[in-house]
Structure formats: structure tokens, C-alpha cells
Image 1: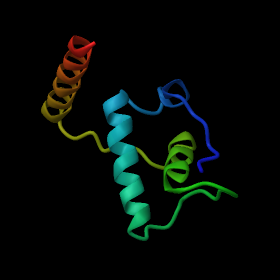
Image 2 (image 1 turned 60 degrees about the vertical axis):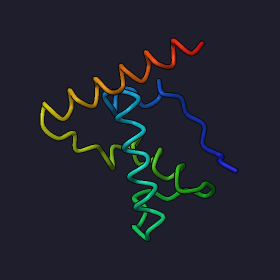
Image 3 (image 1 turned 60 degrees about the horizontal axis):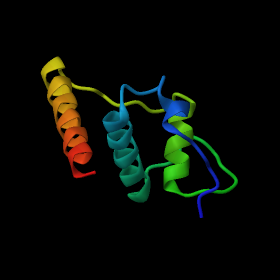
Amino acid sequence: MSEVRFTYEDLKDKVNGRLELSVLLQKRVRDLMNGAPPLVQLEKGDFIDVAIEEIKQDKIFLDEGTPDEIEDMRQRERLMIAKMTKKR
């Protein structure tokens, strides 16, 4: 079970939004699962804990791409939030 606790507030200065955080975590966890060496040492924890700590320590970041790609990603995030809000 995960020992690391965090909230988006803990990482908000490290990333530009929830979608970016999700993408970065997914990419890094996948890399770690495929054998990439961790950039931090934890006594306990799983791949997600390692990725979170790497973000906290500025060891990894998301290559955001071009301004058009960033805007497209943000538009999709807003659409997803709008759809989630309508379901409630």
C-alpha cells in the first residue's frame, strides 16, 4: 500500500494543471515499470510514490510540446470537466 500522501496543492507549482500532472505520472510510472532507474530513493512505496517524489524534487518534468499542443490539451481538459459537471 502507498505510504506517500499528496494533494494536487503539493504539486501545483511543479505542473501546469491536473491533466499535465496525470500525463507526467502515467509516463513516469510506465517508464519505471519498464525498468527505468528511479531518480530518488524511498524506504517504502511503489512506482507512483517514486514518480510523485521525483516531481516534488524537480527531478522530472513534462515536455509540454508546442503552444498548439498545449492549447489542445487544455481544451480537452475543459471539455472533460464540463462533461463531468453535467453528469452530477
